[in-house]
Image (cartoon, rainbow over all chains, first blue to last red):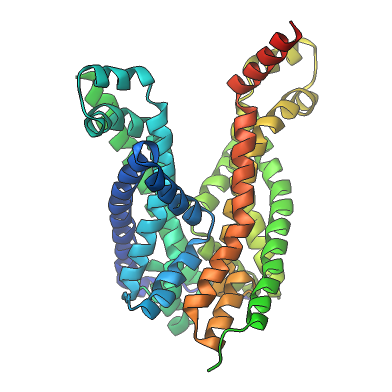
Length: 223
Length: 228
């Protein structure tokens, strides 16, 4: 009853795992870019849009934030085809991630927008700027700065949460791990290695965001 | 093929109890472990502090699904035969403890250090300082984010369906397989999660607003004005 660890068998197939990891990173990065775009637009609509639009955005944000990502994924991948909307597994994963991240990020960006002092907006109005111009040129930058750490943690949650898209046979890191463990029967070794890969990716992104913050918001302002 | 009937709905509804039970178990046990992690995280001894920080980093920095797989497959390698409930409860306890430990650490550290100094000046030893002076104040500010985390935990239990644990999401899958009506089943599943989570979210936001310092001061001023 002694178990002999055999990590060699996992490292033989390391290139496959790297490929899966790259897809995970690509999915998360794309979801962040699109999701952030959704968030910036929705945060504006949520704070300064017409009333029905505001309500609609609130329904989107609350609906997503109070249901599991996995169920959202199933709705997009399994339910929508009944309406004639069909996605491949990887596409469905990306769409679900964008919708999900967009909702969380909307709430975060909105908090940032509301943290901008009213005086600054009044200055914009006094200068005759339009509402969108005020949002774009006065509010957005300090708003994002104020909530940058929260956005960064939300991205890490997105990245780690993306492992559940393996459930619809998207072929990212976790899915590759599942395939490997079923062909090598070395479940524990495979999952340990993959878990550490996720950890490394998460740590690397934290470092990346810290340096982005420094370059964009700290150093950029000194000049 | 058969149509989605009221009985199918009842089947899904009944599965909600397992989601609730797992969430409560993980919250209770994870809260216990998380409380210990939070206290260790602010310990005066660097190695203890680092170990707690490492625990939080490790379990917040890896996917919950991987933690589930590792506990599910891993512990059986060491001769421990775990049934699904035990494995899943252990995994979610560890997961919840990492997040709650971090949240509560933040709340303890949010208490002004003068409180520590004042109680020190009264010659209180470390543990009474922590438990009689700091904690009662920290608990107040900890409640809103803790309720907020409960929402995250309820949603996270959906992942257990991937390893075959029967709860709300898995019940939805089973029903989809039986009725071939994902367009009906999954929105119902999502609706049930929403019914569980939304009240908690609203409650958390309400508590946060109520406990916000300027609001407390505002209420005190109002009271004073009324009395005057």
